Amino acid sequence: MAKKILMSVNMRCQKCRSAALDVGGKTTGVTFVGLEGEEKDKVVVIGEGVDAAGLVLRLRKKVGFADIISVTDVEETS
Image (cartoon, rainbow, N blue to C red; front, side):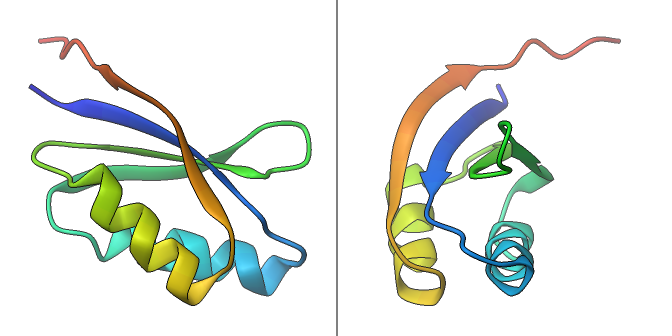
């Protein structure tokens, strides 16, 4: 079953947003990556078998402070 991971990431500029999306997109098992929130300060990742803790560690290394807000199951529609 696919998981939806919502993370808060400290992104100060467009370059930081691009780097965060790039890190999420290169992660194994990810099918969707997007930005959320009024200030586009949250990253949404949807995929199967995605390691949320490992993803946050990579975001912290490349972008800056990152924290997991929620991990939920996503119902797939046929």
